[in-house]
Image 1 (cartoon, rainbow, N blue to C red):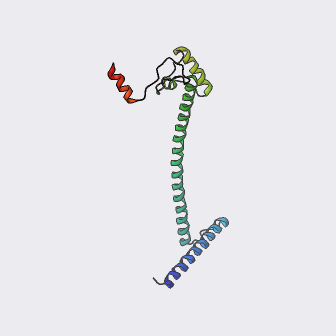
Image 2 (tube, rainbow, N blue to C red; image 1 turned 30 degrees about the vertical axis):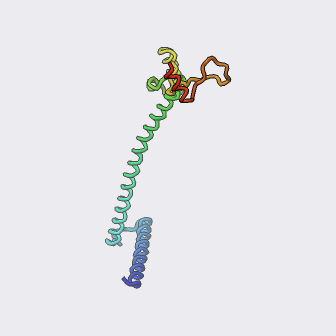
Image 3 (cartoon, rainbow, N blue to C red; image 1 turned 120 degrees about the vertical axis):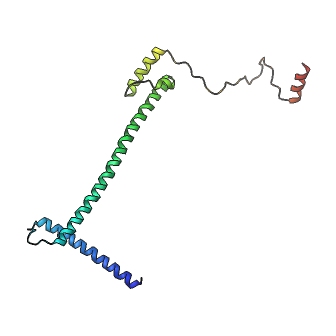
Length: 167
């Protein structure tokens, strides 16, 4: 296409947009005045008005569907968040009283105070929780000052070898 054709098409598009806007304004003015439609009935204006209203209705239906889908997702997420918050609260209460995780899931109540009361009753029934073993092995710690009865640890490999074979 030439540059002149493009300019002509753009001018036509602008003219059509302006005409559509003028038609829309005229239709809105017609609505406000509520003239007798039988006297001045224009089928083209009526068709244009119907198409515009159908298009708006379609857009509103699509937006409504999208909003309903979002609302459904939000409700599900709210339920999930509430459940997770309750679980975290149970674990916090159990940790504060030294209960194992298996017993934390059995705590009842909606507030921290209710869960604390339930946890205390559970501790009374089950007994004081035992100290949980750590996964880290205990180290053989020795005093650093000397004067201890233990033999010093030998680090020389030759001496260790001699001692092993001399016995």
